[in-house]
Image (cartoon, rainbow, N blue to C red; front, side, top):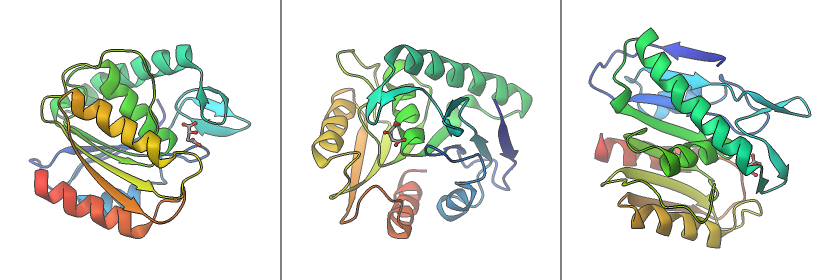
Length: 201
Ligand code: MLT
């Protein structure tokens, strides 16, 4: 997958896996990684799907309606790629914390829904429920930070709460951060993610 890898100064810190939103690229979230964990190595990946020229991590049928078959396939693709990248760049694949926004948060959530131990933790900015009706793998105390907007038309509060419940039922330790805005990524939610990160890692 098209990506950027930057080796960090702190070998002990988790590797941050950056996953952009629809229409973004692998450079978008680099400043966030710097704010959240400046010493971490960073693997920032570009989604392989194009929607009217805009990169995404999986196809959707319409706004908020995911192409489930493609979601499953692309989640496997990303999971396999993490394995490959960990060998190429010599990092511990058990020490990866995802940092995703919107469509990138959704594929990060999908990794947690489908693969046990794929992530050590996750920062999800404005995620949705990636799939329903499946049993999640054990997420045994995995720390998850979810930032959401009270007025987000794409991810309504009820869906954030549903995702939180599903992750908690699988054993994750979820912290929610609410903003009174919409779908946009705000500086204050990134700062809150940084505070959360340093509490757990
Ligand atoms: C998605 O398609 O993943 C969500 O609707 C968020 C977005 O990318 O707009």
